[in-house]
Image (cartoon, rainbow, N blue to C red; front, side):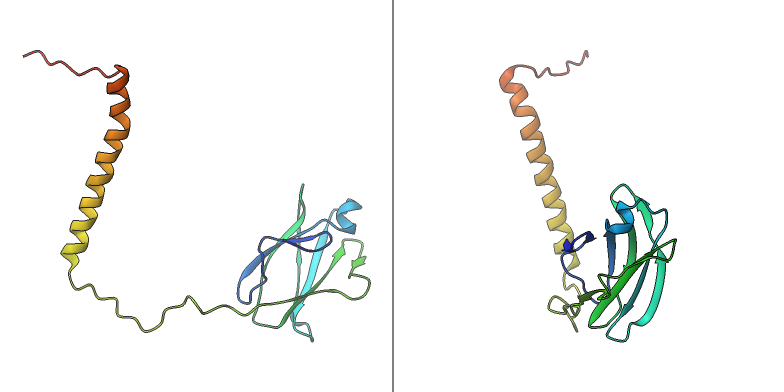
Amino acid sequence: MELTKNIFFNTDKLVQNSTVKISYTGKFFEDNSEEVFIHYGFGVAWDNLSEIKMEKTELGFQAEIDLLESDTFNFCFRNGNNEWDNNDCQNYVFNLEKTSSDLVVQDINLSIDRPNRLRKSYIWSKKVRIAVYKIITYIPKLISGNYKRKITNE
C-alpha cells in the first residue's frame, strides 16, 4: 500500500501491536545513498523513539518495524551524511488502528463429546477423496484406451 509518495507498506492498514515492512524510494534512494536510517516514534510526543538502519534493495530501502499501542506512527529518514528527509519539516505521520477483537472468541469450552464420531468422519472423508482421485485419474485412461491392466502369470 502506498500512503505517501515514495513510501510503501506491506499491509493495507497500520494496526497497533503488529509488524509492518516499510519500503522507501524517496530522495535518498534516488540520490543513491549508501546508508539510510528510519527515525521513528509513536504518538504526539514521539514516545519510544528509535532509529534503525534500513536494508538497501532494488525496490528501495526496507525495514521492519513493530508498531506499538498508540494513536500515531511518526517517522522520518536520514542518510549517512546526516541529511534528513522529514516531509518538509512535517514528518511522516500515520494513524494507527486499534486491534480488532471482533473475531476473538472468549470463554469457550473445547471438550469433544464424541471423539469417535470425529475420527470416523475424517476416515470417510479420506476414502471419498481417494475414490474421487481414482475416478478422475483412471476413467479418462479407460475411455481413451491408454490404460493397460497388469497381467499376472500364474
